[in-house]
Amino acid sequence: MSNKIIIIGGGPAGIEAARAAATAGSEVTLVSEGPVGGRSGWHSLLPSKVWLSAADTAALMAESPFTGSQEIPTPAAILPHLQQIKNQWNAQQAAKLDALGVHIVTGLASFTAADSVIVKDNEGEHVTTLTGDAIILAPGSVPFFPPNLKPDGKKIIAPRFLSALKTLPASVAVIGAGATGTEVVYLFNRLGVAVTWIVDKFGVLPDFPPAAGELMADILVKRGVNLVQVERADHFEDEGDEVAVVMPDGTRVKAAMAFIAIGRFSDLKRLNLEAAGLAVAERQFPETDPFCQTSIPGLYAVGDAAGPPMVANRAMAMACVAGLHAAGANVAPFNPNSVIAAVYSEPQVAQVGIVTSDDDAIQTTRISYSTVLKTHLLPELEGFVELAYDQSRKITGGVAVGPHAGDVLAPVALAVQVEASLGDMAAIFAAHPTLSELAFAVARQA
Ligand SMILES: Cc1cc2nc3c(=O)[nH]c(=O)nc-3n(C[C@H](O)[C@H](O)[C@H](O)COP(=O)(O)OP(=O)(O)OC[C@H]3O[C@@H](n4cnc5c(N)ncnc54)[C@H](O)[C@@H]3O)c2cc1C
Image (cartoon, rainbow, N blue to C red; front, side, top):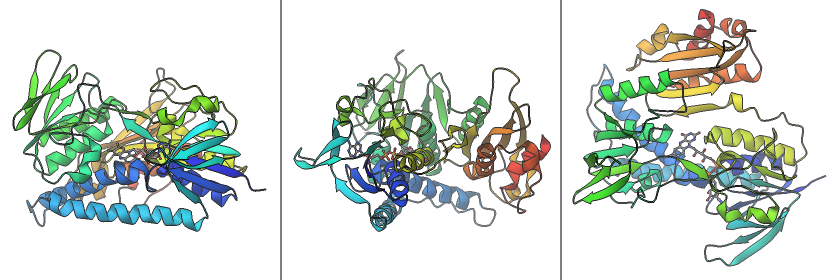
C-alpha cells in the first residue's frame, strides 16, 4: 500500500529522503524553499569545494617536482566554473527526483497540524496545503553570527559570499577554527592571500582529537598563516580600506577582509512546529529515535536540522533511514558511529566512530602516512592514521590527517558498521601503491 510522505527541504537530506521513500513505493512530495540542491548545493558545500579544488590545483602545481609553477587560479577563472558545476549538479539532483516521480513544490512550508503543512511563496502567498501519513523535516541549518559580528557581504564575508567573491583580498582575518574556518584558512593561504587566523581557547578543530587539530595548525603556520589565539572576537571596526577585528581586551587584528564561520544551528524557526505538537527550544534540535523519528509518531527530523555533526554524508545516511522507515520498508537503524566527519583542506582531517574513552576500554594504534609508498609520490608526506579498537579487538573508529584522509577512513567506517576486528582489517593488502593501504597497514601494526 502506498502512503503519502511530505519532505521539507531540498538539500542533500531532503533529496535522499525523497529518493529512499519513492524507491520504496511511497507517493512523495518535496517542498523546497528554493531550487532543489539546498544550501549545500547552492551556497555552502559545493561552492566551497570548487574554491578548495582551485587551491589544491595551485598547491599541486607549486609543489610538483615536475613543474614548480607559481601560477595561482583567479576568481575570474573560478567563478564561472563554480556556476557551471552548481547548475550541472543541482539539475542532476532535480532530474533524479523527477525520474522517481517525486512531486516538487517550491515554497516555504509550515505546520498547521502534525500531519499537514501550508506552503507559501516568497511574497507570503498561499501555494498549496499538503497532508501526509508521514512528514520528514530536512530544513538544514543557518549560520550563527553574534550581533557585533555580522557579515556585510563587502569587507566582512561568510561562506555564502564565496560564490560572488570577484577579487581576492590582499589579506584576510579568518574567525573560526572548525571545519569551515580551517578550510578557508587553507584556501586563502594557498591562493596567496596573507591570512591571520583568529582562534579561540578551544583551539583548532575542537571537534577532533587534539593531535589532529594541532598537526593541522602546525602545517598551516609553517605555510605562513599567522595564528592568533584569543579569548574571542568581540566586534568589527571599519578602518578605511581595512577592517579591524577587535577582541574583548582591545587587541586588534587588521586585514583587507574578515571571514567569519563560527557555527550553525538548525533552521526550525519558520516551521511552526508547535502546531505539530513538537516543542524544540531556541537553537536546539529535536531528539530522534534510531529511525530518525521525533517524539511525534510519523514526524521525522534528519540532516543538519537534527543537530551535529552537521555534515552532508550524515544528513544523507539519516535521510535514507527515515525515508525507508516512513515508507514502511525494512531498514536497519541509523548508526552515527559509521559517519565520517572530514575537513577538506590539504592535508585533510577526518574521523569516524569512537576514538577515545575515559578508561582503557578503547585503545589506539597509529602509523605515519609515510609508511606507504604512495605518500612518497605526493607533495605532502606529513600525516598519520590512527585506528581505535575495544578490548575484544573490534574496530570502533579512526582518525586521519593527511592527503585524502576522508577516503582513507572509508574502510574503517565499513569495519565499524559490520563490527569487523583488527584481524579482519589486517588480512587485507590493498592495491599498491595507494593510500587505501593505510587503513589496513595500521591494523597490522596493532
Ligand atoms: C561552507 C560549508 C562547507 C561545507 N562543506 C561540507 C563538505 O564538504 N562535506 C560535508 O559533508 N558537509 C559540508 N558542509 C555541511 C553540509 O553543507 C550540511 O551538512 C548539509 O548541507 C546538510 O544538508 P541538509 O539537507 O540537512 O540541509 P541544507 O543543505 O541546508 O538544505 C536544507 C534546505 O531546506 C530549505 N528549507 C528550510 N526551511 C524550509 C521550509 N520551511 N520549507 C521549505 N524549505 C525549507 C533550505 O532553504 C535549504 O535549501 C559544509 C557546510 C558549510 C557551511
